[in-house]
Image (cartoon, rainbow, N blue to C red; front, top):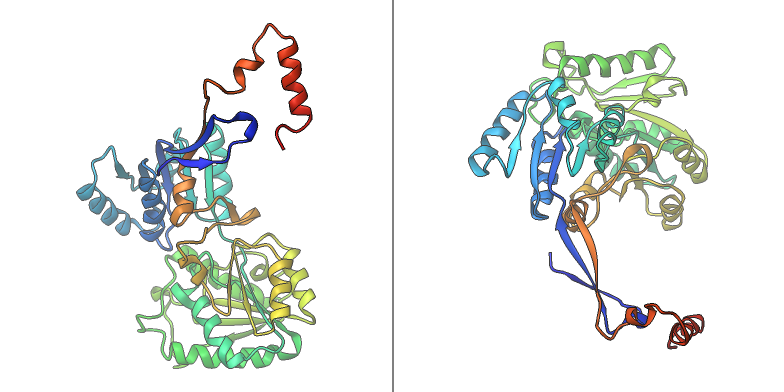
Length: 388
């Protein structure tokens, strides 16, 4: 929070520069339904740390969490410090049209576009934390017995309803079936039952349940191989809104599951020949929010890291780059823009104001009219590059 010393060119000394961070004012936070408390409070805490006031609009899909959050906030902050505004789509629309000093949105790319358009009417700067189809790239020499459990954990955490969840896996074509078997074993060990297993999440509501189920059916109709992993052979009632972990192999390029963000426990597996083919596959699509590399070949790993562009990367793991508070978190391209976490959140919600402290013996008095030999001498000094 303190003023930062900034280098001052010798031509402008003995004056000096400082950079002073100041709060922007009132910050609007629009949170999603998949982690409704965490993804409200993380940006709110960063905004408060920078000295701002905060207004939060939780998702209407999780109304009970929104009401609980409103009670917790009201018990801690006065209404002119932090306030929560539960409500439906109409409330959300009115919220994003307010003239905030900064608007922070986490959610889908489709809604993010509408939020950015609404904010533009007020010239409100926006941070967009969106999703996208985040790839897993598995090295050709990878140990699938070690890799598959890590992919399964990342894919099935919250039943895949995570913005940085692995969306699809790029696997050496000759080892696709081997990888599928390893995934089945890993899932069976992590989730031996599904129906009454509190470790295995339900889909958030009926609309999203139907959407995810439709992705499976569309892939099936298009000729894809569908491998449903249901270790105990249970019947999953639609009222539970639980969908079994599902691998999708040989899906056609036009299949919806390869074009739309999945946000569910489905993992398409796509084959590649050489690592450059995997890089090309990723780069031919919108920039992902996350990318995951699995393998011990450092040369191939570095080719992927330098040859692709993603919001963030975890090597030989999933999701955990999000938890690094010292690192910025954010998207790129269609997966969003702007960052937060730790100091990066403080900077997002601050105006770093540059200040130059003019000294009475500085350069400025020498540039005042009437112009003549004194100015010529100064300009000559500039042309020579000043004091060297």
